[in-house]
Amino acid sequence: MEPSELHRAVEAGRATASELGLQVDDAVVIHNSDRVALRLVPCDVLARVAPLEHLADSEFEVEVAHRLADVDAPVAELERRVEPRVHVRDAFAISLWTYYAPVGSRITPTVHADVFLRHHAALRQIDLDAPHFTNRVAVALREVNDREQTPELPDSDRALLSDTFSGLSAAIGSDNADDQLLHGEPHQGNLLNTRRGPLFVDLATCCRGPVEFDLAHAPEEVGMHYAGADHDLIHRCRALNWAMFCAWRWRRNDQMPDRDHWRVEGLHQVRAALDRCGPNWS
Image 1 (cartoon, rainbow, N blue to C red):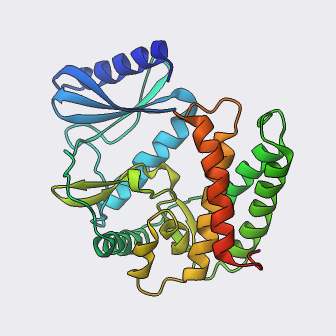
Image 2: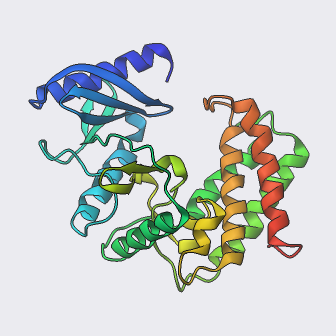
C-alpha cells in the first residue's frame, strides 16, 4: 500500500481491535502488499487489513479458518477473544488472528511433507464451496491476453505464458478424480514455523485440485517425502504456478517490490520448469 493508504489501514486495524476490548498501544507492520498484516501490542493479535474490494476474500478466509479449527488442521487460528468475523472500517476489511512468534529453526523436507499430509487430510474433512484452481488460471490467462492490463509484456513472452496456461491447465484439469480442497498458495512465505509447529497462513486462496498443485509451491525435496505424489504432475503444476506468478508481475498496477527483477526471474523459472516437464508437457 502507498504511505497514505498504509497509515489509514494501520489506524483502521488499531481502532477495530480497541473497540472490541483488546489493548492496543502500538501496531507493527509485518507485511505490506495489497493487504497489510499488523502485530498489535500488547494484546499480541495479528490484524489482516485489506481494501474493501477484497471483502469477499477476507470473509472466505475467515470461514475456511473457522472450519479448519474444528478438525485440528495445522493452520493459524482466528483470535479467540473476539467474534470470528470480518469487520469493516474506513473502506477496509479487518480480520483478527492469533499472533505467532516465529521460530528460527529450518523446516526440514520431511516435516514439511508431514504438515502437508495433515493439512490435506483436514481439508478432506470439511465441506466448503471453493473454486477449482483452473478458475485462477483463467484469470491469469485473461490478463496475459489483455494488452491493456499487461502493456509491457513482450509478444514472445506473452505467447509463452498463454501457451503454458492453455496447455497445462487443460492437461492437469482433465482428470479430476483425485481433486480435493487445497490451500492454493502454500509457498514458503505462507508456512510459519512456530512453537506449535509449522502452521499454514493466508487461507483465502483455498481451491480445488490435485494435491500436487499445492506441493508444487514447496521445495522439490518436499514432494519426495509425500506418500503417493505424482512427481511428473508436480513438475507441470510448478510450471503453471510460475506462469501465474509471472502474469501477476506483468500487470500494469502490480506493486510487488523489485518487480522488474521478478518479471525477468519469473520468465526464467517458467522456461526452466517447462524443461523439467519434457518436450510433451501439455
